[in-house]
Image (tube, rainbow, N blue to C red; front, side, top):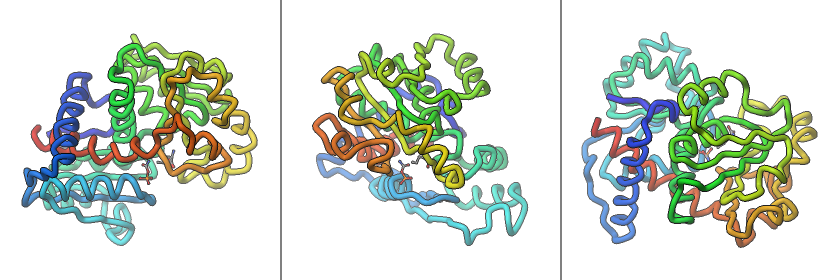
Length: 303
Ligand code: CP
Ligand code: NVA
């Protein structure tokens, strides 16, 4: 049995196997084939924060594969009505897989520690592995290869940026991050990255123009993530120079595609001109959440 809490939990060849499964299942879906390989299986979505893409793409993916999903929100009382260990032991004996979205990464680790079925991280304050897998899968589709490409992330070095850096390290994609000094990757994350992936070609800069030079993908995310609302004013003030706008995209090669995990705060981290422009792939990128997660579910339930 395996858990996917971060992309450090997977080997590169396992990620490649997940991509291969996702490709097969995406092609089958396009041909109208919805093979019920998980008929009689149940997926629980245990979510502490709101979601559109993650919730709907996992529910839909599992329905296409013949399985059933239950969405568990605040009323199940995770960590409130009983100990987290009792909760985890009981929940995971009923279901085949749990996708969990938690405020704190330690909560997902604790769930997995007591789980008797696989646990998939559907976003925490530190990581968003399913997002990054789908994003690299999308880059592969768009450019036809991954090794040697460059992904430039501009903005807050948040959960999505962490997972993108690890995904790029696995797949030999150069990763550049342009963020203000106080919103860069922290030492703890950089140490983990170096320990697991010493060969990552990582560019850390405070200058967005430097980051997007030679980029094949330009990526941004919100400046105020879920749970950071109290810091909104200061974050917006500091991150303002990191907006992805027409001027910044003009500094990237014309082959560069604009990416965003969504939801976007238009007029903050990205302008309408860019997100609705010809280089933007945000809609097919979101679509690939469903296809990639089918591959991930098929892989994890086969372990
Ligand atoms: N990108 C993403 O995870 O979106 P949701 O928060 O809507 O799930
Ligand atoms: N960084 C964002 C991602 C949302 C999908 C957040 O955590 O709110």
